[in-house]
Length: 322
Length: 209
Image (cartoon, rainbow over all chains, first blue to last red; front, side, top):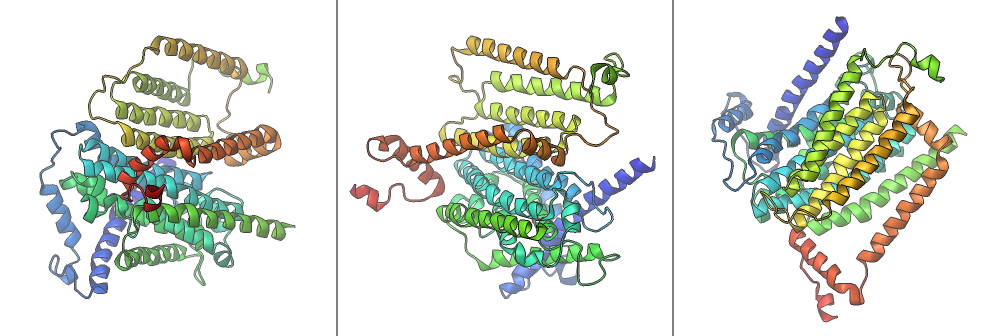
């Protein structure tokens, strides 16, 4: 009985994180972007610095009419937002935030689970783009697919490097094995992983699939109301997942200069929040890459770097263990 | 494991929950696979293929082969199907039925499929009829166990496969870089890609050639 209760509590906690964190990041993005651009951002909703803006947005989305274009493939069009969003919920289950089993469900091959399920999310964009019966949507979906195929490989290679260093595929196991000198050792892999993750989430500067000045809003052009909001939520949930993963794999998760025992989860959250701030910062700072530049970056820069990181990891590992 | 020792205490008439789940998922997977090859809507076929491949991954999970299950999702659902959908959308993916999405070979295909299925089922049943998975003990399909057996007993096939893949990779590069008389298909592909990616269809240097 207590087992079932334990599992239920963990799943509820993961679900709450899934509902709250993306909204927090969304609101942070409103405010951080505004201040970086010399304006205030939302100020009225909720009173204090517009904290309730996203709640108001949610109410607005829920009130809008849910339109399915006449020429669209109804069922796939309606199913696509769920396919885009659910993988991130599943991934959150496997990410540890603290020591002593503070994880939704510890998995033996957690790193593979996380990367595999994250890749499935793009199917949502593909389905949305194809089912909309809209040329811009189709172009956006094609770009999303090409982007995923290009960036999945460096992401996987960079993650493999950490798994080699730790000698395990389980996410809590990797953080257990972490030492501070892993940060300089794995820094190249970390940068590759984070960059490829940004591209997989289609965040600026890698937002070619939704490039608004060229193809309106890519695969999501025809969506309205709640389904559109679900796609936006998927993007922010993706940021949470990517930042948490990067901090777990490359920045030591719950390890910190002090307080690793009681306040370990605070370190994880702090690192995740810092990385999320970086994601927002990048969006404000860099212009969008052109599609061919984007492909070139993946195949000629990130993949060789990831391979070099794997070689370095292997050499150091052999030297240490001999 | 000997047959007598392992088969004792297990019977086909008192299935456990896992066995029932395995059977149900298997039926669902088979159904999705049948729809994949019978539907007239091309993209629907690809999406049903996702369901079928996902079902196979769940079957692996139920057999405690966690690592293989996630690799199945990563490679097949995450990459192969995305590539397939990419190809479909780049060429021809109408919404609704495709009247020409049919082949005169379907009876031959059916015979081949049935023969392959019969052979596989026979081999697997013959080999593993008396093997049971112990859910209480150590996980038999963990990443560590898979890696150990792969790199201890199956290194040679593993290396041979990697050479095969390398050859395929080199071949793909050679095909896609072919100039001269083979330019026509390559140029058509390039134009298609240029339409998607917004790059100029033919670069000035190619115009001069």
